[in-house]
Image 1 (cartoon, helix red, strand yellow):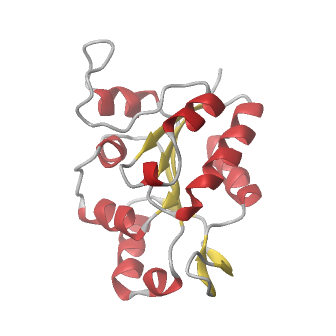
Image 2 (tube, rainbow, N blue to C red):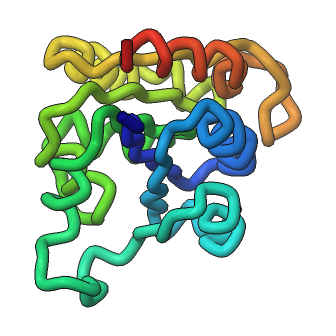
Length: 178
C-alpha cells in the first residue's frame, strides 16, 4: 500500500529543493501532498508542486473543501509522515509554542504520525538560543530533525543553516516509514 507523505514547505530560499524531493519520493511510489505556507509561495508556485506531485497543493486554511470536511484533520489522518522541508525559524518557533494559525501548523498539531523537520535559515538564526530551545522542545515530544549543514547561505555567507542534502533527507524519510 502506498505511503502518504505530507510535505510542508515554508518561506525559505531552499523551497526550490522541495521539487527534487517530490520527484524522488514520487519515483519511489510515495504519495506526496504539499502544504505551503503563504511565505513559501513567494519562492515556489503551487502549479509546480502540483505538477510534480500529481496531487492538489493546500495552503489556505479557510479554502472551501471539495467535500464537507475539515481539511487539516482529513490531511493529518491520511498522513504516514509529515516532513517540513524546508523549515524556517518561524515555523519551528510556532510549532514549539503550539501556535496553529495556518493550515500547516494545524495539520501537524492534529496529527499522530511522525514529523521530520529539515531546517534551513541563516546561521545566526539557527544558532540563536531561542531557535535551539525550540528544537530541543520539539525533540522532547518526538519530532525528528535532519540538518542543517554548513554551506553557502542565501545571504552569501558560509555557515550552518544550509538545508541537509536531499539524499540524506530521503534516506531518513524511508527509514521512518519502514
